[in-house]
Length: 539
Image 1 (cartoon, helix red, strand yellow):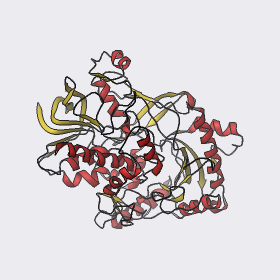
Image 2: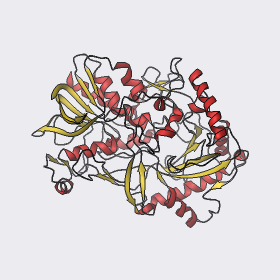
Image 3: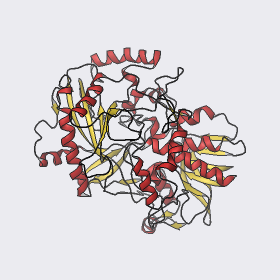
Image 4: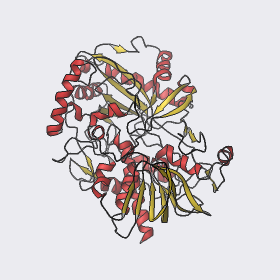
């Protein structure tokens, strides 16, 4: 069976939802969106605290691909865990909802790397176009977009104490880290509804962009449909083969095929389709369509190191009978007015700071959580506690995505090569030292009980051992279909795949360098900008 459309989009995550909504605004455009997961409407997605059930990927994989990495030599040969959203909305359906644009200079750097049109002044209008910010419009904020950006509904007192602890350690308070100055300590803004009808619910990309327009006659949304390969006629992409309900189908594209599978699935589908490094295609007996050595290379991610403490304070997210009783009451409160403990993003507090006065912008980031976080919530601790995470925001280490097999139903191979550049370890060590000083400050004395795992940690060797034995991703993989004009670039600044026709990649994989912050907000921006470029070509 085959159907014909103008645009076929692979991947209904953040970028795919934006593209499907924007391209189908014109009723003359026939748009098809192919998503491997479900519709992204269930309670665990809508309830912010539902992330604790979806993130672990076990005992069930709920809205989650739950990928694993190869053993990482820099992390004592441990396999890392890579949760990615598998539903309409993608990872915006299972993340902590934090709305972070990154540093303005990051985008100017993209432009300097051969990506004209991607400086901060170029991308700012698209950030503003995406958002309906509860704080209202300003020179840097928008209030007319589909994506609801909210102040937290019920931040815990401990999160405000964390900001005070940062201030006491020389990191100034900064109420708007997405504003003119990124550095400072704050409570995160979140992608959460602030209107009366859905107040307190997660505002995923699907809830913001796609669900409201699913009834458009010119928009076809296929869920539980796994893309298998891109269809080519010579060097021209003409459609996508996909599997749904045990049957193989084709969706033909008269204008363009748009890949929005993310940093792991987009390069995988390119390679499965004969586009990628010659050795990788040959290894799996895949007929080459276009040799592009950069496909799957340049993988960058934020490695995350955590310090955790038990607490006698019960105004936190805990595990146990008493906590369960509390959470039932909090659930009823959330259903009533969208507030309370279960409206939390968990990572309520944060900070951007410089490791030394010599760096030009913050190079370390903190996430302060109102619970004990251990192995991505796959290891639970009874009682109450809190955690803080630190990451190096512009790591030097580079990894890759490759094919485990030529079977499109198999997971991609993921090798982040964490800490393969020694400079990342040195900077992470300094970040851990600062984070520990903050957590041991008087401002948090009321909440602090026992340190978990690190009570005897003193020397640099102790810190390095903790980093290597317990660190893992904080879920920001990018770069595997990098934008640019160099030999390893996969797409040009219009996001068109080099050497091919009618094929673009639109997702976080196009970032030439990882931005200094969380990657969901920039992905909305990338898709909004791409939609404008695509529509300009069609007019």
